[in-house]
Image 1: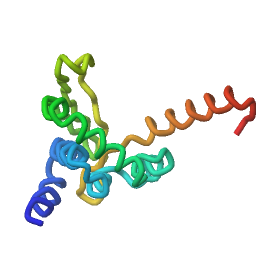
Image 2 (image 1 turned 45 degrees about the vertical axis):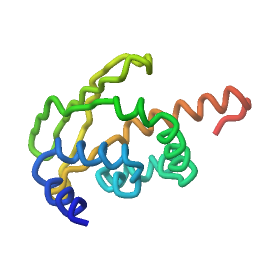
Image 3 (image 1 turned 90 degrees about the horizontal axis):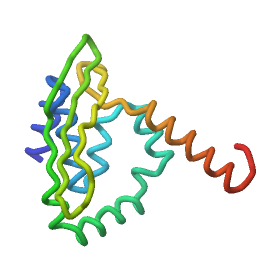
Image 4 (image 1 turned 90 degrees about the vertical axis):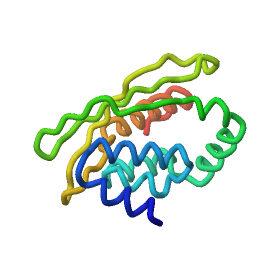
Length: 145
């Protein structure tokens, strides 16, 4: 309970903390609390995609158990934070273990401040994903949505 309270309190001051908290909770498999760090629209679209589906969570737990050593070697770090009014960007460097054969990269998270609370905004990414998914289903079935 103390961890949750400290995460909640730190969330409103720096957008980098919001990203750190969401990533930490996601890695731990606590998607119910991780999703609280996203905008309402982002959460709705993520639900539509199925990211918060219990089956998805169970699959994550199984893969976490099967690759615990590899996952523990995954490193990420907030490397840059820019705030402009009620908008912010946070850059996170991801470094993967060599055995995973995944190229290291930097991800940029967009955040908005809502009622003095920073929230991760991935609505445009989710809309793009859903549009691509629909196009692929149309191609496979020949039916337009």
